[in-house]
Amino acid sequence: MPNASSSALLLFGATGDLSRRMLLPSLYALHEDGLVDAGLRIVGTARSDMDDDGFRAFAKEALDEFLPADRKDETKLAGFLDRLHYHPLDASQIEGFAGLAEALGDTSEGLSIFLSTAPFLFEPTIEGLRRAGLAHDGVRIGLEKPLGNDLASSQRINDAVAAAFQERQIFRIDHYLGKETVQNLMALRFANMMFEPLWNSAGIDHVQITVSETVGLEGRKGFYDDTGAMRDMVQNHMLQLLALTAMEPPVDFDATSIRDEKVKVLRALRPVKAEEMVRGQYKAGAVKGGSVDGYADDLGDTSDTETFVAIKAHIESWRWQGVPFYLRTGKRLAERRSEIVIQFKGVPHNIFADRGGKLRANRLVIRLQPEEYVRLQVMAKEPGLDRGGVVLREVNLDLSLTTVFAKARRRIAYERLLLDLIEGEQTLFVRRDEVEAQWRWVDAIRKVWTAEGLDVKPYVAGSWGPNAAIALTERDGRSWND
Image (cartoon, rainbow, N blue to C red; front, side):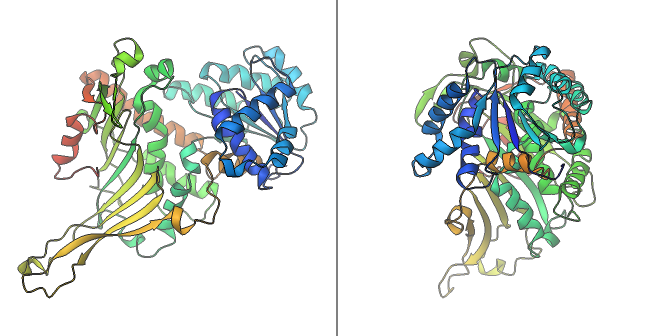
């Protein structure tokens, strides 16, 4: 049973925004392409009081809004909606889970659960599932973040889940791991001989990881002000990108091998000093040509919550000794961008110097969004007779995933993650020891903030963050890839 596809999928928070925008469109795409078994039942649950027909109408409205026009096949839409069922549930009331189990019916052929809920509901939800007989050996449970707000609360949630489920049944979700370009990072490193010999402190000067947003709070006031950029983005997405970039070659492309290597990186992260990080908060400015308010105005109150973080991180290992990893993330920045930049070291001797040729070190840019590409910046000679000297210019060798694989179906991350949950493939999910290693590092940083009184520095909306973040790289003789 553990390796078989589930015959039913249970969606908690089925009437929420994540379900509307991502889960239902993703499940429809899997249905449309015949990637899930024809007998798979999808049961939604939430506090909203509706029946099957009401949930199907809700789903139809969501698909009309969020599906691309070329994906709307009315026959397949009707077939997908027929899969959907609904059972209302207040997850804080454990006695209500018996009715949920009755609505699901026989789950002996496998049940996958997608749990997206407020942190305070994790423990009663898990206990309710256990008491209702929905935590048996054939059940898998996918956990959407946030899984706590520090190490202690994360451990409480993990302990509660572990009391009902074995680790092989637990699928902790970080949707960045479902992105095609993130997976291509492993193919780039481990399927090409040209990169791996240079992927270390001998060949690489530094690494940059940027996840920038142009949006502000966007209806997340309460959650975001309690969380901040460090816990919202660095603790999960950015540390997972760092781990994939820095990990040693795994023995195999499987869940155990890959996650073993990622956790080694996370445990090797050096504690960060006060002078190696910057906190920021946006003030009024202009984004995409329009004026926007500052964070305090968006929030409706004063706050010292950070909307921007920049960190100079180090990995204490032979491979990465002396190589800084610069991380930055923030809201209301100059553009929306997620990327990993590998800055190689320069060549040891410039043979063109006497002829006027100037060199720049090679740079590899792995763009995750909004475009998806891998770009290697190399030096080339400009055409000409060179009587006035050799002119060297940086040119791009581009692999545009959108162009090269134009005929392939572009899938959003949740399509892959939901299918892997249903089929029991854990490679792209986060193991408990990874989560806790991430929290230990982040908690230590937040303790430094408190001990050192590290204030948030203002930055103008539409910029690349506080000036101190620029200084973080420039005092090392480096610069951000803006």
